[in-house]
Length: 483
Image (cartoon, rainbow, N blue to C red; front, side, top):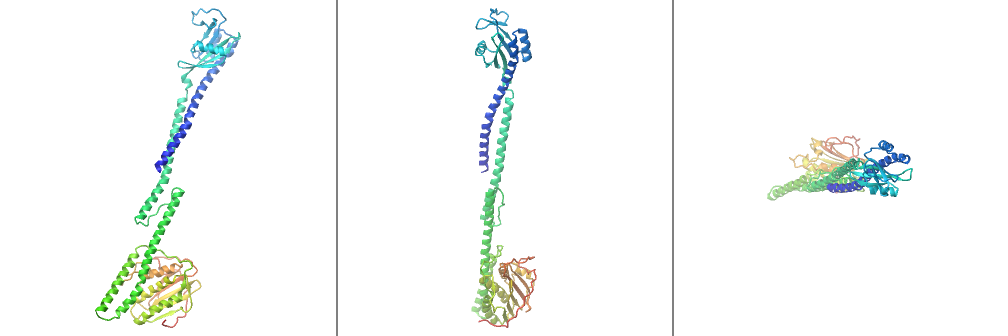
């Protein structure tokens, strides 16, 4: 494209220069010729008054000398009719047999002079080294004299070569300038296109961070914006797919926890050992899937317009599942605030996955017999879900909230709390970790109801909330089991 623009500009500019320079050069040459013959006419006109008064040779020679160079001017005067002897070289007989007198050097032929005298109007004729102007002048006697003015070729072409050289230089400068401008325009158009192609190749090779600078003509700027938007969308889709794979894999840990607990109660024996070994291997495979799916940087999920669920109903449903396992392990549990409907802008499956992740952590990371509780508080602009236990607590809440910071020694993937954090942040809320009234860990999920953005946080994402909210109080229901 770049060289095509240069060639087109070169061809167009060359045609324009030729179309204007050639006629202009011819006009300049004609103007120089007209100027030279105009000067000759003025010189001839200066002699005409003297010829109309006298034909005396001496006086006319003085007039010719004062009007111009005697080498460039000649005056041809017809005589009165006496025969010419032709011996002195100054008198001669014209075609009518009359004596004629010449002043100055004659360059035109006798035929040209006779023709001008006969026609009675000025004429030019070519001679050696230039041209002559033959100007007829009427004498007092009624005869016609002819004034001859020699115009050398150098005077006719005076300044023409310089003007043509200037025109050629200007034309060449215009061509070079147009080629340079076309080349710069071509670079301005081609370079963004090349970067767009390079970005497409890089994106196709798997370098998802490849982006194209928005520059160049408006069309290429729009193309760059569209490419960057497409690349962002591809990255987000891939991240969402990885997140979905990780979330689905993490949800498998809930039934695996049940299998692990049931396998632990099988006692001794080859079948029991094989079952426990199979459950442990299955847990390792699930953890491998989770870690592999978490390679890409996750994206915060946005709340779906119109999506929502009854948090109280979801809490009752999930506690109905986990209460059976709690009774098997001798854990005391309680639920508070789930006796009335509480609508939140979160999908039912997301809230259920978050509760399963937190309760699964309780069963996985606390000893048998450790009590736990789930509290639901409904406020004007937010809903708070508290999951607390009586375990040993979390020594580093910031590290626990950071994705991928889970300790590998206990098999934790660090994804459970991140699932909870993303669910809360999708509504503009947040998650914080603290100490519970039971003596262990308390995870507070802040679900925003009015869609306002979450307050600014420092440190790792998902860290404890920095904006202190007044803690809402609620009556804790007595412990009870759900059917």
